[in-house]
Length: 120
Image (cartoon, rainbow, N blue to C red; front, side, top):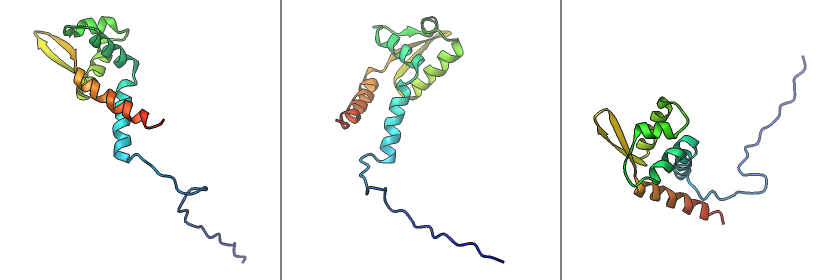
């Protein structure tokens, strides 16, 4: 019976060229990733643009006709925007009227801008 040679595995403690600094923690990366993700979908961008261009609250039925997707999809994206704090709504009878939370949008924009400015 022959024995096969064993291969000793060495623990790799650094990259091939040396250690690099990671200036962003996992929590910070998760936060900025969430910021990018909420603005990344075309339907959400359309909804936010509609709300940003309106001086008054916008009825959900108007948002449904402005965006070329079905009502359940609009409702899904509105829920994500509400959960992110970017929009708020008020019920009036069977309808919901949405407004843009401009302060929350400005906060997200500033955070994204500061992150991207760090690349320069």
